Amino acid sequence: MVLVVVLFAVMVPSALYKWTNDASPIRSVEPIDATVKSTHSDNGRTLYLVALETGSSILVEDDLPHLIGAPARLERVTRENGMVFYRFAK
Image (cartoon, rainbow, N blue to C red; front, side, top):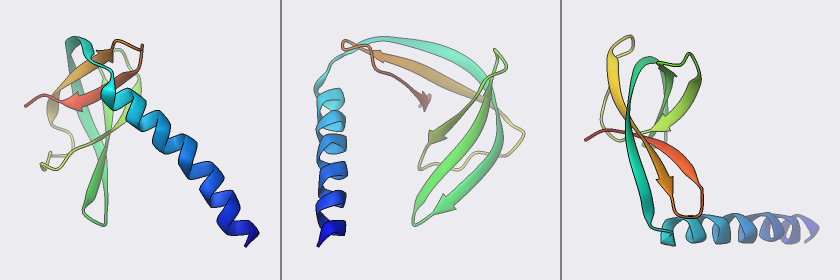
């Protein structure tokens, strides 16, 4: 019973945070050059470890396949509430 309460207490704020960010309009989109370093696929979800041109590495989720070692075009998306995320350019 305690486990259920703890899980509920963790999941509700997380869901509210995601809904808030999804509702916030996009303020800017900046193109960024990167290189795909590795990939991890699990239950139909694929995460890519991507090295940015600045030398930083980030995880980016995408449904389309990307070759390891290949250059990639990403977009740095900033929402009105200040939330920043990265996505592969379409």
